[in-house]
Length: 117
Image (cartoon, rainbow, N blue to C red):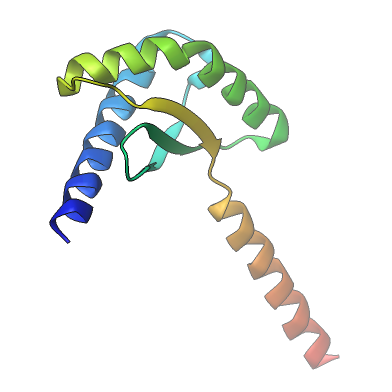
């Protein structure tokens, strides 16, 4: 249990460090990107960083390219901010939770509409 709490706290620190540094990267592809969560592997070697941005599929693709380009810089920044001996590999993933919720809501509205017909 204590180990899980340690991993969770470290994941939150990484989330905060990345979220604070993204706006200062001066990459227009990463403007208005929000870091939503971080999941760390049990061995602390991999940090899966989930992000979201509004603007459609093209904007998502641009942000993904921005994260790919900034990966090394962000890893170095996170390492220095957290003072870790070994820093995790950062992997960036689009968080589609809001998209799924929107699709589910649309389907529910459609079902409700079909019931009234």
